[in-house]
Amino acid sequence: MVLLKHHLKALRLPTVTAECEKVAAQAATDNVDHLSYLLQLCELELLERERKAAERRMKAAKFPTTKTLATFDFLARPSVNKMLVLELARCSFIDERENVLFIGNPGTGKSHLATAIAAEACAKGYKVRFFRVTELVTTLIEAKDQRVLARLKSQLSKLDLLVLDELGYVPATKVGAELLFDVIATAYERSSVMVTTNLPFENWTEVLGSERLVGTPLK
Image (cartoon, rainbow, N blue to C red):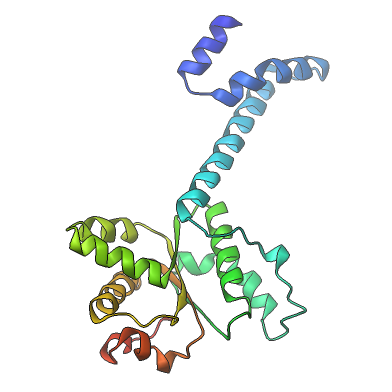
């Protein structure tokens, strides 16, 4: 058994290492054949790997708080289309490279819904990154000043879903607005962007500072 565990460790099968004796004892009790025993161990290993991968994606997404659809009070916000939200949580819009825009007054649950749907995307295997818009603009300007903007844009281009929260609270500078627009334009039809804002689309020029930059709305 010591040699077996050594080999399993070398093969990087930690769950099989941890569970093999317990599963073997149960297999003997249930009179399970060797292949069924091996199948059970492989399934446990895969499930644990999927769980850890989902945890890594959640960590990489950098959500400010943990939110779920189960904790969203749809009854308190009857204007929210629950069926549409549940459909978005299936994440097929990401496969279609479509974008999602949540518009509403402060306190209506936009960030909660965006975070919860994005978390569902992480669980389903998609690469996600959450930014408050002011945070992203600051990060982009700093990257430009430090001459690492291309590297940052390359990282963002590899995402399946980019969440931009709270567009509109602080107007962007001309440089910041152009950098933000460039990120959105680069993602267009290549990946999905989810935006939450309290501004109607026609007022986005207040943030981006140019009608040219908002000439093509998100889907």
